[in-house]
Length: 386
Image 1 (spheres, helix red, strand yellow):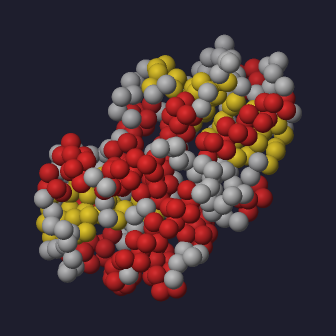
Image 2 (cartoon, helix red, strand yellow):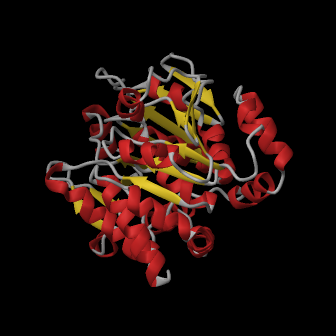
Image 3 (cartoon, helix red, strand yellow):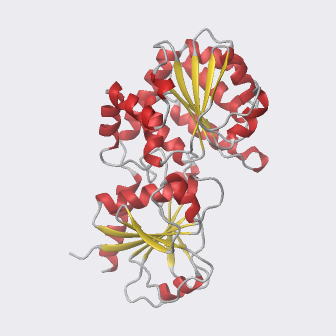
Protein backbone atom coordinates (compact mmCIF):
# COMPACT_ATOMS: atom_id res chain seq x y z
CA UNK A 1 0.00 0.00 0.00
CA UNK A 2 1.32 3.41 -0.96
CA UNK A 3 2.00 5.69 1.97
CA UNK A 4 0.00 8.91 2.16
CA UNK A 5 2.05 12.09 1.86
CA UNK A 6 1.74 14.71 4.58
CA UNK A 7 3.02 18.28 4.43
CA UNK A 8 3.39 20.29 7.64
CA UNK A 9 4.02 24.04 7.31
CA UNK A 10 5.68 25.78 10.25
CA UNK A 11 6.45 29.46 10.63
CA UNK A 12 8.72 30.24 13.56
CA UNK A 13 7.11 33.29 15.16
CA UNK A 14 8.90 33.56 18.49
CA UNK A 15 10.98 31.30 20.71
CA UNK A 16 10.86 27.55 20.00
CA UNK A 17 7.29 26.51 20.74
CA UNK A 18 6.09 26.47 17.13
CA UNK A 19 8.94 24.42 15.73
CA UNK A 20 9.07 22.30 18.87
CA UNK A 21 5.49 21.12 18.43
CA UNK A 22 5.79 20.69 14.64
CA UNK A 23 9.02 18.72 14.86
CA UNK A 24 7.66 16.36 17.52
CA UNK A 25 4.51 15.86 15.45
CA UNK A 26 6.47 15.21 12.24
CA UNK A 27 8.80 12.73 13.96
CA UNK A 28 5.98 10.82 15.60
CA UNK A 29 3.90 10.58 12.43
CA UNK A 30 6.88 9.32 10.41
CA UNK A 31 7.91 6.80 13.07
CA UNK A 32 4.54 5.39 14.07
CA UNK A 33 2.22 5.69 11.06
CA UNK A 34 2.31 4.62 7.39
CA UNK A 35 2.84 8.15 6.07
CA UNK A 36 5.61 10.13 4.38
CA UNK A 37 6.12 13.43 6.16
CA UNK A 38 7.60 16.62 4.75
CA UNK A 39 8.16 19.52 7.13
CA UNK A 40 8.41 23.03 5.68
CA UNK A 41 10.04 25.46 8.11
CA UNK A 42 11.11 29.05 7.54
CA UNK A 43 13.91 29.09 10.14
CA UNK A 44 16.21 26.09 10.11
CA UNK A 45 18.35 27.69 12.81
CA UNK A 46 15.47 27.26 15.27
CA UNK A 47 15.18 23.58 14.39
CA UNK A 48 18.94 23.15 14.80
CA UNK A 49 18.69 24.48 18.35
CA UNK A 50 16.34 21.69 19.39
CA UNK A 51 17.72 19.04 17.00
CA UNK A 52 21.49 19.58 16.59
CA UNK A 53 21.80 17.09 13.71
CA UNK A 54 20.01 19.63 11.49
CA UNK A 55 22.11 20.98 8.63
CA UNK A 56 21.55 24.49 7.30
CA UNK A 57 20.59 23.36 3.82
CA UNK A 58 17.45 23.63 1.72
CA UNK A 59 16.47 19.95 1.86
CA UNK A 60 17.46 17.03 4.08
CA UNK A 61 16.16 13.90 5.79
CA UNK A 62 16.08 13.75 9.58
CA UNK A 63 14.43 10.96 11.58
CA UNK A 64 12.56 9.74 8.45
CA UNK A 65 11.19 13.24 7.90
CA UNK A 66 11.96 15.27 4.79
CA UNK A 67 12.82 18.76 6.06
CA UNK A 68 12.63 21.62 3.55
CA UNK A 69 13.27 25.34 3.86
CA UNK A 70 10.13 27.41 3.40
CA UNK A 71 11.44 30.49 1.63
CA UNK A 72 9.67 33.49 0.07
CA UNK A 73 10.37 32.09 -3.39
CA UNK A 74 8.44 28.87 -2.85
CA UNK A 75 9.06 26.37 -5.68
CA UNK A 76 6.09 26.37 -8.07
CA UNK A 77 6.72 22.74 -9.03
CA UNK A 78 6.03 21.37 -5.54
CA UNK A 79 3.07 19.00 -5.61
CA UNK A 80 0.60 19.31 -2.73
CA UNK A 81 0.45 16.39 -0.32
CA UNK A 82 -2.54 14.20 0.49
CA UNK A 83 -2.72 15.88 3.89
CA UNK A 84 -1.74 19.52 4.36
CA UNK A 85 -1.29 20.96 7.85
CA UNK A 86 -0.97 24.68 8.49
CA UNK A 87 0.51 24.93 11.96
CA UNK A 88 -0.82 27.77 14.10
CA UNK A 89 -2.62 29.67 11.33
CA UNK A 90 0.41 30.22 9.12
CA UNK A 91 -0.75 30.90 5.55
CA UNK A 92 0.19 28.48 2.77
CA UNK A 93 2.39 29.73 -0.09
CA UNK A 94 0.23 31.10 -2.93
CA UNK A 95 1.74 28.74 -5.51
CA UNK A 96 1.09 25.75 -3.26
CA UNK A 97 -2.50 26.87 -2.66
CA UNK A 98 -3.03 27.27 -6.41
CA UNK A 99 -1.73 23.75 -7.01
CA UNK A 100 -4.13 22.42 -4.37
CA UNK A 101 -7.05 23.91 -6.33
CA UNK A 102 -6.32 21.84 -9.43
CA UNK A 103 -5.34 18.65 -7.63
CA UNK A 104 -7.40 15.72 -8.95
CA UNK A 105 -7.82 14.19 -5.49
CA UNK A 106 -8.40 17.07 -3.05
CA UNK A 107 -6.00 17.33 -0.11
CA UNK A 108 -7.24 17.01 3.44
CA UNK A 109 -6.46 20.53 4.66
CA UNK A 110 -6.05 21.20 8.37
CA UNK A 111 -5.24 24.20 10.51
CA UNK A 112 -3.54 22.87 13.65
CA UNK A 113 -4.30 25.41 16.35
CA UNK A 114 -2.49 26.38 19.54
CA UNK A 115 -3.16 24.30 22.63
CA UNK A 116 -5.83 25.73 24.91
CA UNK A 117 -7.95 24.50 27.81
CA UNK A 118 -10.70 27.09 27.27
CA UNK A 119 -14.25 25.74 27.08
CA UNK A 120 -14.98 27.14 23.61
CA UNK A 121 -12.28 24.92 22.07
CA UNK A 122 -14.53 21.84 22.24
CA UNK A 123 -17.15 23.54 20.08
CA UNK A 124 -14.62 24.66 17.46
CA UNK A 125 -12.65 21.42 17.19
CA UNK A 126 -13.03 19.92 13.68
CA UNK A 127 -15.00 22.96 12.50
CA UNK A 128 -14.96 23.52 8.74
CA UNK A 129 -14.04 26.85 7.16
CA UNK A 130 -14.29 27.67 3.45
CA UNK A 131 -11.36 29.57 1.97
CA UNK A 132 -12.74 32.90 0.63
CA UNK A 133 -11.01 32.84 -2.75
CA UNK A 134 -10.57 29.13 -3.54
CA UNK A 135 -13.75 27.67 -2.08
CA UNK A 136 -11.74 24.81 -0.57
CA UNK A 137 -12.59 23.59 2.90
CA UNK A 138 -10.15 23.68 5.78
CA UNK A 139 -10.70 21.93 9.11
CA UNK A 140 -9.68 23.51 12.41
CA UNK A 141 -8.01 20.96 14.66
CA UNK A 142 -7.68 21.96 18.31
CA UNK A 143 -5.35 20.16 20.71
CA UNK A 144 -6.71 20.05 24.23
CA UNK A 145 -7.20 18.26 27.52
CA UNK A 146 -10.65 16.71 27.11
CA UNK A 147 -12.10 13.90 25.00
CA UNK A 148 -13.91 16.45 22.83
CA UNK A 149 -10.60 17.95 21.63
CA UNK A 150 -7.64 16.67 19.61
CA UNK A 151 -5.57 15.71 22.66
CA UNK A 152 -1.85 16.41 23.07
CA UNK A 153 1.29 14.85 21.62
CA UNK A 154 2.35 11.57 23.23
CA UNK A 155 4.52 8.98 21.51
CA UNK A 156 3.41 5.38 21.94
CA UNK A 157 6.37 4.40 24.12
CA UNK A 158 6.85 7.74 25.91
CA UNK A 159 5.51 6.76 29.33
CA UNK A 160 7.30 3.42 29.19
CA UNK A 161 10.63 5.14 28.48
CA UNK A 162 9.99 7.73 31.18
CA UNK A 163 9.25 5.07 33.80
CA UNK A 164 12.43 3.18 32.90
CA UNK A 165 14.53 6.35 33.15
CA UNK A 166 13.01 7.53 36.42
CA UNK A 167 13.46 4.09 37.94
CA UNK A 168 17.15 3.84 37.05
CA UNK A 169 19.44 6.26 38.89
CA UNK A 170 22.44 5.12 36.86
CA UNK A 171 20.71 6.37 33.70
CA UNK A 172 20.06 9.71 35.36
CA UNK A 173 23.67 10.00 36.52
CA UNK A 174 24.91 9.15 33.03
CA UNK A 175 22.62 11.79 31.54
CA UNK A 176 23.95 14.55 33.79
CA UNK A 177 27.54 13.42 33.22
CA UNK A 178 27.02 13.66 29.45
CA UNK A 179 25.94 17.27 29.95
CA UNK A 180 29.05 17.93 32.03
CA UNK A 181 26.96 18.23 35.19
CA UNK A 182 28.75 15.87 37.57
CA UNK A 183 27.98 18.35 40.35
CA UNK A 184 24.32 17.36 40.04
CA UNK A 185 25.21 13.73 40.71
CA UNK A 186 27.01 14.78 43.90
CA UNK A 187 23.98 16.51 45.45
CA UNK A 188 22.62 15.29 48.78
CA UNK A 189 19.41 13.27 49.00
CA UNK A 190 17.69 16.21 50.68
CA UNK A 191 18.42 18.57 47.78
CA UNK A 192 15.47 19.72 45.69
CA UNK A 193 16.51 19.53 42.03
CA UNK A 194 14.75 22.13 39.89
CA UNK A 195 14.81 23.07 36.21
CA UNK A 196 14.01 26.71 35.46
CA UNK A 197 12.87 27.42 31.89
CA UNK A 198 10.85 30.62 31.56
CA UNK A 199 10.45 33.94 29.81
CA UNK A 200 11.78 37.12 31.40
CA UNK A 201 10.05 37.37 34.77
CA UNK A 202 10.42 39.81 37.65
CA UNK A 203 8.99 37.17 40.00
CA UNK A 204 12.29 35.30 39.80
CA UNK A 205 13.80 37.74 42.33
CA UNK A 206 11.49 36.60 45.13
CA UNK A 207 11.95 32.96 44.13
CA UNK A 208 15.75 33.17 44.28
CA UNK A 209 15.61 35.03 47.60
CA UNK A 210 13.33 32.36 49.07
CA UNK A 211 15.47 29.50 47.84
CA UNK A 212 18.71 30.93 49.18
CA UNK A 213 17.14 31.11 52.65
CA UNK A 214 15.52 27.68 52.38
CA UNK A 215 15.98 24.98 55.01
CA UNK A 216 15.94 22.50 52.12
CA UNK A 217 18.95 22.81 49.77
CA UNK A 218 17.89 23.76 46.24
CA UNK A 219 19.88 23.04 43.09
CA UNK A 220 18.47 24.95 40.14
CA UNK A 221 19.42 24.09 36.55
CA UNK A 222 18.84 27.01 34.17
CA UNK A 223 18.82 26.17 30.44
CA UNK A 224 20.34 29.00 28.43
CA UNK A 225 17.53 31.37 27.49
CA UNK A 226 15.41 34.41 28.29
CA UNK A 227 15.13 33.89 32.05
CA UNK A 228 18.86 34.64 32.44
CA UNK A 229 18.01 38.25 31.54
CA UNK A 230 15.95 38.47 34.73
CA UNK A 231 18.28 36.29 36.77
CA UNK A 232 21.70 37.78 36.11
CA UNK A 233 21.07 41.24 37.68
CA UNK A 234 20.35 39.44 40.97
CA UNK A 235 23.76 37.76 41.06
CA UNK A 236 27.25 38.95 41.94
CA UNK A 237 28.30 38.16 38.39
CA UNK A 238 26.44 36.95 35.30
CA UNK A 239 25.80 33.23 35.14
CA UNK A 240 27.50 31.73 32.10
CA UNK A 241 26.77 28.32 30.58
CA UNK A 242 28.63 25.63 32.48
CA UNK A 243 29.13 27.82 35.55
CA UNK A 244 27.66 27.39 39.03
CA UNK A 245 27.02 29.92 41.78
CA UNK A 246 26.26 29.17 45.42
CA UNK A 247 24.00 31.62 47.25
CA UNK A 248 23.06 30.41 50.69
CA UNK A 249 21.07 27.18 50.34
CA UNK A 250 20.74 27.70 46.58
CA UNK A 251 23.08 26.38 43.89
CA UNK A 252 22.46 27.86 40.44
CA UNK A 253 23.89 26.10 37.39
CA UNK A 254 23.51 27.44 33.85
CA UNK A 255 23.28 24.61 31.34
CA UNK A 256 23.37 24.64 27.52
CA UNK A 257 20.18 24.82 25.47
CA UNK A 258 19.51 21.09 25.12
CA UNK A 259 17.92 19.00 22.38
CA UNK A 260 14.32 17.80 22.61
CA UNK A 261 15.35 14.32 23.73
CA UNK A 262 17.72 15.70 26.35
CA UNK A 263 15.06 18.09 27.58
CA UNK A 264 12.67 15.19 28.16
CA UNK A 265 15.35 13.52 30.27
CA UNK A 266 15.93 16.75 32.20
CA UNK A 267 12.23 17.01 33.03
CA UNK A 268 12.12 13.36 34.08
CA UNK A 269 15.18 13.70 36.33
CA UNK A 270 14.26 16.89 38.18
CA UNK A 271 11.99 17.06 41.22
CA UNK A 272 10.28 20.24 40.02
CA UNK A 273 10.07 21.86 36.60
CA UNK A 274 9.39 25.47 35.74
CA UNK A 275 8.36 25.46 32.09
CA UNK A 276 7.07 27.91 29.49
CA UNK A 277 5.12 28.16 26.23
CA UNK A 278 3.54 25.04 24.71
CA UNK A 279 6.05 22.31 23.91
CA UNK A 280 7.84 22.20 27.28
CA UNK A 281 4.45 22.63 28.98
CA UNK A 282 3.16 19.41 27.43
CA UNK A 283 6.36 17.47 28.06
CA UNK A 284 6.41 18.51 31.72
CA UNK A 285 2.96 17.00 32.18
CA UNK A 286 4.21 13.66 30.85
CA UNK A 287 7.12 13.84 33.31
CA UNK A 288 4.56 13.40 36.11
CA UNK A 289 6.52 15.79 38.32
CA UNK A 290 5.40 18.99 40.07
CA UNK A 291 5.53 21.91 37.63
CA UNK A 292 4.94 25.65 37.35
CA UNK A 293 3.94 27.01 33.95
CA UNK A 294 4.96 30.41 32.57
CA UNK A 295 2.41 30.98 29.83
CA UNK A 296 3.30 33.17 26.84
CA UNK A 297 2.25 36.75 27.78
CA UNK A 298 -0.51 38.32 25.66
CA UNK A 299 -2.06 41.76 25.36
CA UNK A 300 -4.65 42.82 27.94
CA UNK A 301 -3.61 39.87 30.13
CA UNK A 302 -5.58 37.42 28.00
CA UNK A 303 -2.98 34.79 28.86
CA UNK A 304 -4.33 34.78 32.40
CA UNK A 305 -7.70 33.63 31.05
CA UNK A 306 -5.93 30.74 29.35
CA UNK A 307 -3.90 29.99 32.47
CA UNK A 308 -6.98 29.83 34.68
CA UNK A 309 -8.79 27.67 32.12
CA UNK A 310 -6.00 25.11 32.36
CA UNK A 311 -5.86 25.30 36.15
CA UNK A 312 -9.58 24.51 36.26
CA UNK A 313 -8.85 21.18 34.57
CA UNK A 314 -5.48 20.53 36.19
CA UNK A 315 -6.71 21.05 39.74
CA UNK A 316 -10.29 19.80 39.38
CA UNK A 317 -9.69 16.64 41.42
CA UNK A 318 -7.19 18.19 43.84
CA UNK A 319 -7.83 18.70 47.54
CA UNK A 320 -8.84 22.32 48.32
CA UNK A 321 -5.70 23.31 50.24
CA UNK A 322 -3.33 22.24 47.45
CA UNK A 323 -5.70 23.62 44.82
CA UNK A 324 -5.55 27.06 46.41
CA UNK A 325 -1.78 26.93 46.97
CA UNK A 326 -0.91 25.93 43.39
CA UNK A 327 -3.38 28.34 41.86
CA UNK A 328 -1.89 31.23 43.85
CA UNK A 329 1.70 30.25 43.01
CA UNK A 330 1.01 29.93 39.28
CA UNK A 331 -0.95 33.18 39.07
CA UNK A 332 1.59 35.27 40.97
CA UNK A 333 4.46 33.72 38.98
CA UNK A 334 2.73 34.76 35.76
CA UNK A 335 2.02 38.27 37.05
CA UNK A 336 5.61 38.90 38.10
CA UNK A 337 4.75 39.24 41.78
CA UNK A 338 6.25 38.02 45.06
CA UNK A 339 5.97 34.22 45.16
CA UNK A 340 7.73 33.70 48.51
CA UNK A 341 4.68 32.96 50.64
CA UNK A 342 3.02 30.83 47.96
CA UNK A 343 6.18 28.79 47.42
CA UNK A 344 6.45 28.05 51.13
CA UNK A 345 2.83 26.91 51.22
CA UNK A 346 3.31 24.59 48.24
CA UNK A 347 6.50 23.15 49.69
CA UNK A 348 4.64 22.17 52.87
CA UNK A 349 2.25 20.23 50.64
CA UNK A 350 5.03 18.59 48.62
CA UNK A 351 3.85 14.93 48.91
CA UNK A 352 0.34 15.96 47.84
CA UNK A 353 1.80 17.98 44.96
CA UNK A 354 3.75 14.94 43.79
CA UNK A 355 0.66 12.72 43.91
CA UNK A 356 -1.38 15.32 42.05
CA UNK A 357 1.22 15.46 39.25
CA UNK A 358 1.15 11.69 38.87
CA UNK A 359 -2.65 11.55 38.91
CA UNK A 360 -2.93 14.25 36.24
CA UNK A 361 -0.47 12.43 33.99
CA UNK A 362 -2.41 9.19 34.40
CA UNK A 363 -5.68 10.97 33.64
CA UNK A 364 -4.23 12.53 30.47
CA UNK A 365 -2.84 9.20 29.31
CA UNK A 366 -6.37 7.77 29.12
CA UNK A 367 -7.14 10.09 26.19
CA UNK A 368 -6.18 9.51 22.57
CA UNK A 369 -3.07 11.48 21.65
CA UNK A 370 -2.90 14.24 19.03
CA UNK A 371 -1.03 12.27 16.34
CA UNK A 372 -3.38 9.29 16.47
CA UNK A 373 -6.41 11.57 16.29
CA UNK A 374 -4.97 13.45 13.32
CA UNK A 375 -4.16 10.22 11.51
CA UNK A 376 -7.58 8.66 12.16
CA UNK A 377 -9.37 11.84 11.11
CA UNK A 378 -7.42 12.11 7.85
CA UNK A 379 -7.90 8.41 7.07
CA UNK A 380 -11.64 8.82 7.47
CA UNK A 381 -11.72 11.97 5.32
CA UNK A 382 -9.65 10.32 2.60
CA UNK A 383 -12.04 7.35 2.54
CA UNK A 384 -15.04 9.67 2.27
CA UNK A 385 -13.43 11.57 -0.61
CA UNK A 386 -12.40 8.36 -2.34
